[in-house]
Amino acid sequence: MILLPVDATTRYHSLHARNHDMIKCRSCHGQNKEDARFCSHCGQNLERVCRVCAERHTPTSRYCSKCGTALDPMEGQQSKTHDGERKLVSVLFADTVGFTALSEMLDPEEVAQIMHGCLSILTREIERYGGTVTQFTGDGVMALFGAPNADEDHAKRACQAGIAIRSAIIPFSNKILEHYGSEFRLRMGINSGMVVVGSVKSGGITEYTALGDTINTVSHRRVII
Image 1 (spheres, rainbow, N blue to C red):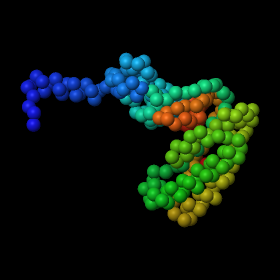
Image 2: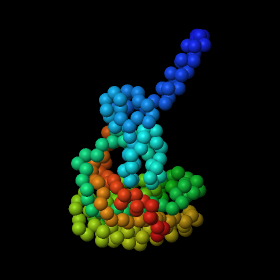
Image 3: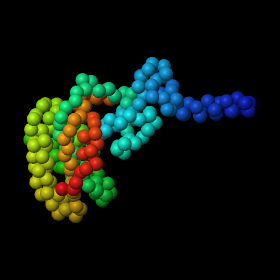
Image 4: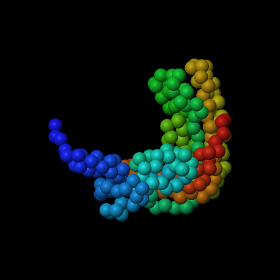
C-alpha cells in the first residue's frame, strides 16, 4: 500500500474527478470537456443527433429534448450521413401496445415467437405495396414509401399497406388471445412530408434512413388499430 501526502492525495482525487467529467473523442481519443460540441484536438463533431427528429444534443445527453427518443451512445460523432437528399415521402410507424407487460407474462421464447410473427406481417405488407423497412425498433418498424425509390403514389401505397396490416393483424391477435390468454394490440401512424434521406454510418454499420419533423410527427400520432 502506497501512502500519498495530503496535498498529493487531494490532487489525485481532483484529477480523477476531472477525468470522469471528460468526454473521449472516438476519432482521436483525445479528452474533452463534457459540454464540448467539437473535439479540441482534431475538430471532430462530438454531438449526438436524434435518429427520429434530427435534434442535436451534447455528448452526455441520454434522451432527445424535443421528442424524448433515447439517444444511442454511438449516435453523433461516429455517425455521418452520406448523399443526404431532401425528398417528399410517406412514413409508416407501427409498434405493439403493452409489449413490456406481455414480456413479463410469457417466457422469452414465446415472446420472440410472437414478435417474429408480428414483424413478418408488417414487413410482408409494407414490401407488398412498395415500401422499404428502414428501422426495426424491437417491437415494431419504421418504413418509407417514396424512398429510396421515387414513387408519386407513395401516400396511397402507405395507406394501402396500413389497411393490409390492420386486416392481417386482427386474426393474428385473436390467435394470441386464444393461445396465451393475453391481448395483443398494434398501433400505427402514417405521415407524408419532406425528409432528409441518405446512408448513415455508425459503428461500422451503414443504414438507409430518414430524418426530419415528418418522422417526429408520425412517431407521436400513432393510433391503436
